[in-house]
Amino acid sequence: MPSDLSPVIAASARWLLSAFPPAAGPLNDALAEAQARHAVTIAAALRYPTALDAEVLDLLGPGGSGRLDAVTGVDTLPLWAAEFDWRTRVDETVVSWAACLLADADLAVVAAACTAATHHGAGGIGGTGGGIGGARRLTVPSPRDHRAAPLLRHPDLLHPIADLHRAALVELLAPAPSAVARGRA
Image (tube, rainbow, N blue to C red; front, side, top):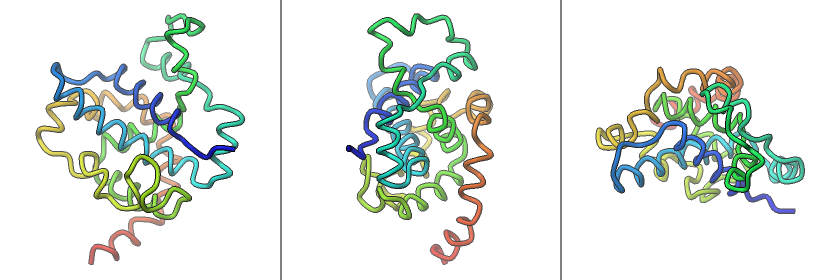
């Protein structure tokens, strides 16, 4: 069974970018996509930390974007149409956690560091590895990154999505800050 989270990562990042579109222009598109993919990749690694978790996801499916669409007011789409098939591969918890990470760079640093403890670990899925270097646009966003994705990085706009599963993410990462702080010293 595959332990590849790529379909969930791609669909969840696509959902974020369609709900919170980047500023106009191809460079902004690319920068916003990089930020969304980093956030979703880290969230997916934390949500499905073992190979078995990823295999169960592959077997049962992620659940789709239905609740997310309803929260953002997009619940009128004909989800049975072929052009919306990708929405069935969206994982609500992964998107919610990614929204938390996009809205809070400090939380993103802790989350990125925690991916080292997952099956996906260093050099893992999406190229983020266990450290924060591969997810720099997420963890240390430049002013250019913020200008490229003003909606995707706006805490007030992300709030309804982030709050869906924020408590579970905070609980998961609760022991991590002291370990991360020791690593920086």
